[in-house]
Image (tube, rainbow, N blue to C red):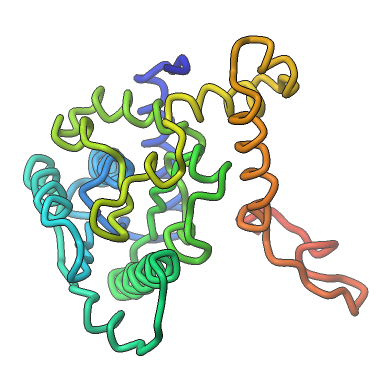
Length: 266
């Protein structure tokens, strides 16, 4: 595992959540509670600093979703006293009469879910808590304007293996920590199965590439497979558009995103 001071990480993330939400005059946080590792750790940390009564976990199943996802979401909510609401998105998704492959359906479900999270955010005056981690951000393993849409990203600078370690540290149930990570986009889907590389290997390579700023050849000389390193680099480069604001065609003297730039709290 990439070295991480777990107590310091916990305190830093909790302070980040509290300060960012309160400076905008919001009352709490809302997130999609999938029963997976990432949403679980965000929900736990948010409830510890905001109070469980100020965190709302949304359970958003599709008719083909795994029953285990809902069971684990409720298991976590019960252990930490987190409020939940359930909205079945099957009719919403099936009402879109269009032939779709698994990838398109998965993207549709992710965007429908996030549209509900944002609506509940407006209803309750809550911040949308993103649950994407650093590994997913770097390789682009997120749905653009789906699970990658949020008001803040508490674990966005933690690799997946670090998230797992922190989840164990704060008491996320073992059933959630030990299961294979999955976006539950179709029956039997797992992240590592779809990507074809384990999170342990991905994190090891990505950490050396982007945190330690090692060259590709240096990493390969340390024993990493060239094909795997090349593939990860291509995934990062190919999905750069997901990590930046969409470009605006410049026509005026000051253009948003180019030369009309201010800090977020301006």
